Amino acid sequence: MASSTSLLPTAAAAVAAARRSPSGQHCSSPFALPSLLLPRRLSLRQPRRAAWHAVARASASARSLDALIFDCDGVILESEHLHRQAYNDAFAHFGVSCDPAAGDAPLYWDEAFYDDLQNRIGGGKPKMRWYFGENGWPTSKIFEAAPSSDSDKEKLDWKTERYKDIIKSGTVKPRPGVLQLMDEVKGAGIKLAVCSAATKSSVVLCLENLIGLERFNGLDCFLAGDDVKLKKPDPSIYITAAEVKLGVQSQNCLVVEDSVIGLQAATGAGMSCIITYTPSTSNQDFTDAIATYPDLSNVRLEDLKLLLQKSLVTG
Image (tube, rainbow, N blue to C red; front, top):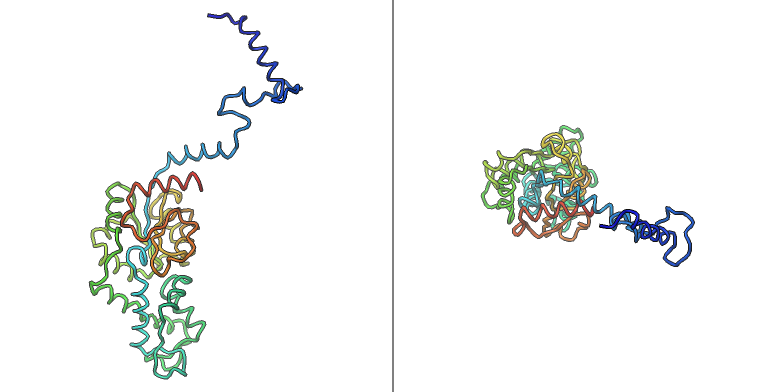
């Protein structure tokens, strides 16, 4: 074994070499060591971004998917055409008209108009309030003159009852893959929630009829539009779910949405979001989603875990 003194020439040579730059020019400071003499992980030339990603990967590996949160309309069931039918059925049944020139013809929202409306304004009552605010509050069989008070305007929510009748008819089924993914998540001990901008009575009816009472009662959190002051795209409903109901960090939640309004609500709450788009939302800008799917039929829990960890590293 070589003595420590025998190593001195080698060390001295290393220091001498260290005082020269790669071009051979002398370095004035004995501390200006070139990166090639440093361990690779401490290289002065290593980009800071690479170091940040190493830290992020280590942090992400310690995190987990703690809660999966579903929207209801458009995610659990493809419902927009059902809502439009309910609006138009209610308009016809009660003789709702905003245009005196239309005579006895009731108000009718066609598919193109409704697709645009539902992608800009969340919730049933907000849609009607916006439309009547823009076009005048209607006359109907309930009111010969347009209502003026807030209490009378509230009576114009006829559509919800008609929508409930459609759901209870037994003809509506959940979207592909929804029930399987819900069962997989619950079986893995991960928290499961539903957060919808629709009225509570409407969402309860949908869930009881489409996912069944056992799954509905097994939800760790259920929030509807009635439970928060502001509708999506405001993030309140998702923040409330994570902080108040589920007791988990937003970054460890994953949201399933179908529209850009829902996506904005999820990301505004600091949550990652996947999209299962519908025909009426397929052309929206989902750049901020970590994945998009036509439905959940081929999506498994392990896929979601990997997506969440990837988003924490690259986000």
